[in-house]
Every structure is written in C-alpha cells, then in structure tokens.
Image (tube, rainbow, N blue to C red; front, side, top):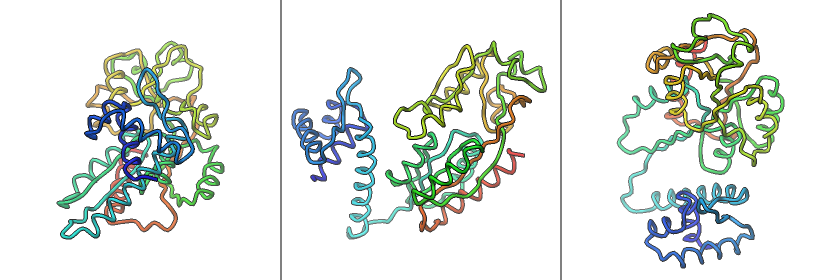
Length: 307
C-alpha cells in the first residue's frame, strides 16, 4: 500500500472534491483519480462514490479513512521523534456530545493551557462516532450519552471493544426556549403543551451506518408536528433566540449561556427519563496531565450546572 495514496485519499475525504484536492496537493487531477483507483484496488473496497455533490465516502470508505488518518498520524509522530532538533508537541483530543456544561469545561480548560507547543482537538458528535473516533481516528478521550435504560447494552459494548468507562453525570433533559416563547411563562410544562411548537433536534443520530441506529432513533421520536434537524450547536442558539415558536431538549445549561442568547430553561414534568454521560478511553491508556486538567474542569462544571 502506497503511503502517498493514503494521504491523497484523506485529502479527498476532507474536501469532498477531486479537483479541490488535486489543487491542494499540487497534483494533476487525472493522476489523483488514478491514485485513488489504485488504492481501492489494493485494499479491495470502494472508498468513494462520485455524486453531484462531489466525492462521498462509502460506509467502508468512512471506516478506512479513519484507519488511514491514524496510520498517517503515527507516521508523523515517528518522524517528529527521530527528526533532529524536532520539538515534541503535546496533544489533547476528545470527542463529546453537544452539551453546554461540557463546552464550558473545555473553555475553562483551554485557559490553563500555557504550553508553547500543543495541538488540541475537540469534536462534538454522537455516541457511536465518539467510540469510532477513539478506536479508529486517534482520539484519546470521549464522552458518550445514552438513556439509562440502555445502560447494560452500552457497558457490554464498551467492554467488548476494550474501552474503560467512568460516570460523568446523570440528569433528565430540560427544555430551553426564547424568553419570548409563550411556554416561558410556565414553571412546569407537559408534553401536551409542546404539541403546537417546533422542536429542534440534532440530526446525526439518523446516520444510517450506525450499528445502534434503532436505539438512537428512539431519542428522536416522530411525535411532533414540526421538527428542525441541525448538526451545529451554533445553529440551535440562533434558532431558539430568534424564533419564539421553537424549543429544544438539552442537558441542564449554564445560566450565562441562557442569558447570552435570551433563553430560559424549564422542567417538563412529563419527561422523567434519565440520561447518562460517560467518559471513555482505551483500556491501558494512561491519562496525561492535560487529560486530568480537563476532567477536573469537567467535574467542576458538572457541579455548577447539573444539580
């Protein structure tokens, strides 16, 4: 297998376009296309599908690119270790659910990072992608979220995949909405109260390649007349603050975030389901000082916001 071909494939996956990747790599597009075909022949799978949107990863290709990134990262690390005069960078990487208390912890953690040479990676995504990022993409830490009734399932899966897990937090979802939303006048809210409003939810639990898609899909029931599905947390705050007909289920949010976006948080007496956030990492992995600093900030944020 040609290492250059791996680098080419990773770049094509990153930009989603042969022409753009060829431009970035300073390579003729026909040569790049031929290299991708040779790589697919070498590994015996179809990595990309060509579509009107560009180069799209197949499910097998998505898994392959995860492995390719990890291989290239290891090669880079070996080169740095043995290259004369090279400065060794510290690295911190974590994959997490979209949660205000976690992002608050990350922001506080970032203030404590004073090293001159360091790379930090913070990825917000769903639980299955978090597990994949640790197993295949070189991430060291992850936080996954699931409903308590799936506790045995997830712990069994984590054991099978060789992952250590520790409890971070337990909570019930809260509702957030604009201060101008009529629901904001209620101290407690029922499911019936929500029926005429627009639900905002994160869309990636619908990713068809997930092995637990049926389980995750239950977190997005089709019991609301109108739903808006998004991928970015910034979008949710813009929608909630500007459209008083919208609401969202979230883990308890810090007051400063609510104030910043002109939002309020309310309890729904009909929703008693308990959720868990679990810290995960590979068995045998030794936590670094950076890891420990982040975990300390995470515990502090949890105590402030999840009471």
